[in-house]
Length: 86
Image 1 (tube, rainbow, N blue to C red):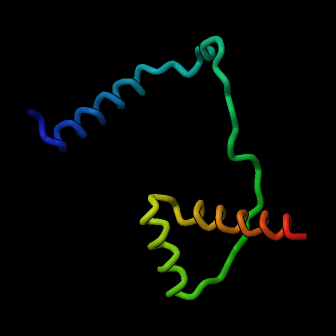
Image 2 (cartoon, rainbow, N blue to C red):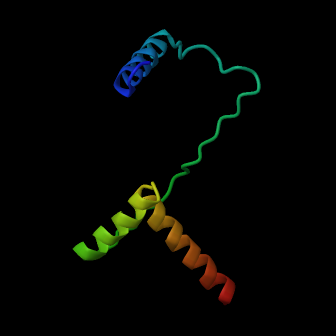
Image 3 (tube, rainbow, N blue to C red):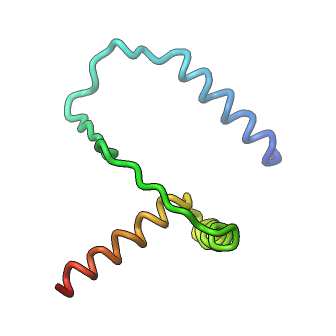
């Protein structure tokens, strides 16, 4: 049985081979739906203490999420709750 490193290396090699064979000039197959989930958005900067930043990062890591994704979800959940309360 192959070990994990061998499988990972083989998978990477297969991905590289497939990328080299890909032809980006061919049309998409019939029925392919193209979406743009990340519509243009605005940046929002937020200052946190080191302790707050590390705590947020720890929670995000525990949930296997990027910290910005988790923070955005929390902020939008709170905004939704505030709007429903008014």
